[in-house]
Length: 205
Picture 1 (cartoon, rainbow, N blue to C red):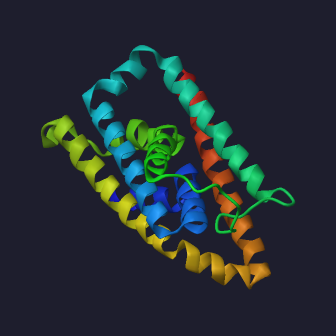
Picture 2: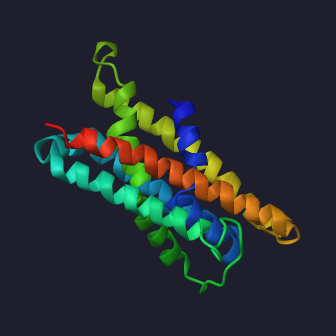
């Protein structure tokens, strides 16, 4: 589970893009405040998933299918924006208005709540590691969720603290920026393709 969480958090997505952009534009403190908001978003997902949200998607399956389809389109759009000519890379500085800590926290929370990767993590990936033979499935769900949150927060905090340094390093190496964009866009596209393959499976009766 820890390895799966690590792979997911290292794959660029809405959370990482938001945290990096805020850290570069407004400083590390802004990045940490935004990260706190995403952390609360993880807690919300973990609680809802373990207290019956999965049942809702079983009863109304089109909601789950729609969520996956929306996630595919969103990740594909992010990949297109990164790979297209003139697109911006993950660690390229861009002008952003300075927001208050309250707004940064709320935006971090909202970004994570609307993040298709987070939804897939709690509604499709974590349940695969739950074994009813090992005791309470709810307790296992919370334990695995806590493990995922710990891995994600450590990795994202490291990225926030290093974002400005990485951006400065890339700024004086234009060729590296080009490769960073290609790698980021390709990873986003790969995740979108993998999720797209699951949409027809979810739609089957």
